[in-house]
Amino acid sequence: MKDLGATKKILGIEIHKDQNIDKLYLSQMKYLKKVLKRFGMQDCKLVSTPLIAHFRLPLSLLLEIEEEKEHM
Image (cartoon, rainbow, N blue to C red):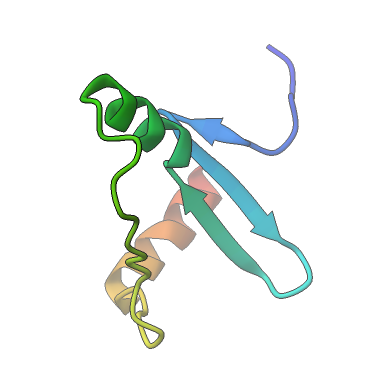
C-alpha cells in the first residue's frame, strides 16, 4: 500500500479543495456530459443548482466525522 496523496476523484465524483478559503467542491460534470451524450441531449439548456448558502451539516454528523477521524 502506498500514499497517493489527496483524493481527486472517487466513484465518478471529482473533488477539489480550495486551501485558501477552506472549501470543498464536488463535481459530476464529466459523468453528466456522458449521460447527456448517450441520450442525445448534449445540446440541452443548462441550469445551475447550487446548495443554499446557509447549508450546514448537523452537529450530530460532525461529531461522527470527528470520531471517524480518530478511528482512521
